[in-house]
Amino acid sequence: MAIEVRIPTILRTYTGGAKAVDATGVTLDELIGDLESRHPGLKDRLVDGAGLRRFVNVYLNDEDVRFLGGLSTPVADGDTVTVLPAVAGGAR
Amino acid sequence: MPYGEAMLTIARELVDKIVAHARADHPDEACGVVAGPAGSDRPERFVPMENAERSPTFYRFDSMEQFRVWREMDDKDEEPVVIYHSHTATQAYPSRTDVSYASEPNAHYVLVSTASDDVEFRSYRIVEGVITEEPVKIVEAYG
Image 1 (cartoon, rainbow over the protein chains, first blue to last red):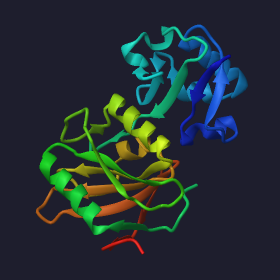
Image 2 (image 1 turned 30 degrees about the horizontal axis):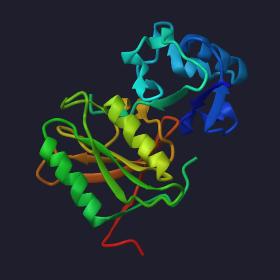
Image 3 (image 1 turned 30 degrees about the vertical axis):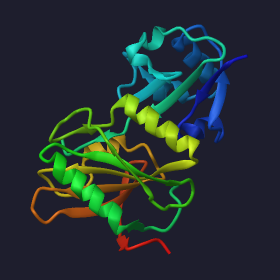
């Protein structure tokens, strides 16, 4: 078993077009490290020095990980992680 | 790359709903999507979204609402054909902020300006930082 990671359209260039890929890890941080080893370049689109990028939403099952533990959120086999770029903008 | 014609074809009823939402939330920016069958390039299902920023100069979909709406689209085999928001004091042209956060390369980005009584309704593709305005064809019904 592994953790399913759902990839948004704009990041599928890193996954050979796949909508979902498998990864492993005990925390979200480890999971993203494992993703990076399989799909180089993906990590930089998800995190920066300070943690998760501000305009990327990452969900563990049905919860935004910002309301859980951010990058230290525990993950387990059978979980689903969903990545969605925030829809944002404005005149400012 | 975006597919479909370099034009937004949209039902008048949907244009009216987008404009009504923009007017109702003025002076804050309003935002939302119009979903349609994946690959069809045809906007059908109007989904007004909460502007989590409640700001006259910025919008951001509420992250949990976006999750629910994106999952619902996935379940129905739909995609966001139109992503709309309003500018309430400036023209309906994508700002630098709009371009930097544009993350749906297949979507028509609709901008509505409520800066004057005559509401502007314009559509753009925003792909890899490049803005391309496209004509808007308003129809009574899809053929």
